[in-house]
Length: 370
Picture: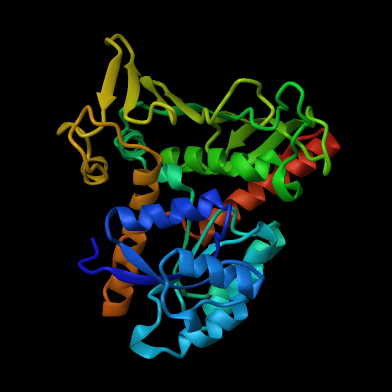
């Protein structure tokens, strides 16, 4: 746990960016870090206007390019940011990670790590031994920590199957309105499928070996990108999995759901009801575990802020990622070791390898190694 409020800069996340606002609110929730600089738009004028709107008073620390920010902020000595947050389109991530790593900044990057696996590997090389957190924020939920602990302790027995679903419906046009298309031509596999893949891997520890994918584009639009993915997964240990990622599922909001099955029982968690985890063990009553209770593992308890019965959600999970990352930044500065519990660049590489295998499988109609 950090004992001081750190300083951070942000690239992207400007006017109209809801994810940029989510990052800023998550950082403010625990007083983890305060914003001291930023490049919020490729337009210097818009960047300046938005930075002032956010309360930055030193106009010289509001920039019109990421390169300018990295160069100037690195020269500020004890006043420079402790880390920099990237909230830009995926196509910008490689260049910006490389710029910041070259200047020695720890980085928080919104997922995915990069646009392609090849770019992800370049980013990993550029990062070297530097710190990077990838905001697969669902790993920050308290009941996901509990699910991971139960799997690790063997409460489910030998793992057999994982089912993870992430259906959304926002691409489906409202009556009388034109259809929407995924921003920047990003497929639903990259947008939400990477979250599903990471969540399954985080909780179970299983690594995908090969995939078989059926992919569709149900919603017309330009650019026309895949918006519905149904993927069969074979894991390294022989377990089986099913991953569904869709943004054309009419009526759905943000229904991320994970089910894990073992020889002795199963777990069931839904992001839209994140404060509960259902456990079903053989020959026992169904158990509903609740966030904030003393019977949970230490990791789950430490992720809670409010008493039981007071719902916590998305921003708290996001803040948990940042709290862990800030502790790692401070530990690195003090020359001490700290167990990392946030998604890293290596997680980003694993997700991009999964996406690439899914794409190849959809093209060839065959099983493809990850």
